[in-house]
Length: 208
Image (tube, rainbow, N blue to C red):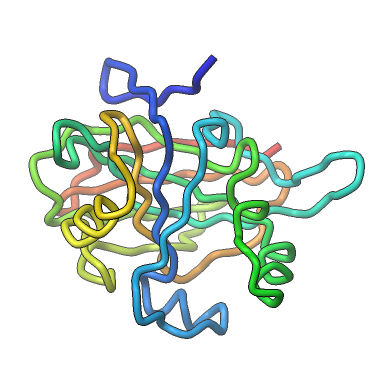
């Protein structure tokens, strides 16, 4: 059975999630990375979508605490971004660092089950004026908006479309601002998406 997300009062079934990495300069700096010459794109499968926020990835041979990354996220429909929501891109940072150091793909650290958590999506007409905020235990830890992006949504849509067939319902995550960190069990996450300062979508989760 495929995982779904909610757009107001209807469901969408993404075939995939297209993710943009290193799209906020201050986040690139906080992780000690370099701003790339070209857009960084990777994929999460439908099986990554979850309603549950996990603090640890664990299986018989590997266990690692997870990092959070808050992102403005879009639903693609009929050739455009039709809806927007708040998304959490969960990352195994230690594993990602090891894979990067060996010049290997990131998917094991980014595309695992439960690696993408989303609020309800709000229908939109254009992407101007969108911003996100993430609070953990009532403390603001991340804040970003479209103007801070290296690659704006229209550029992302055009570039992603060069390589991937975008199906109606697919999600595009546009990168994270500075302030990423470790998820602790019991933490209360509250994410909001605003349009011109007004909340249009939000979600709240307790980390397991």
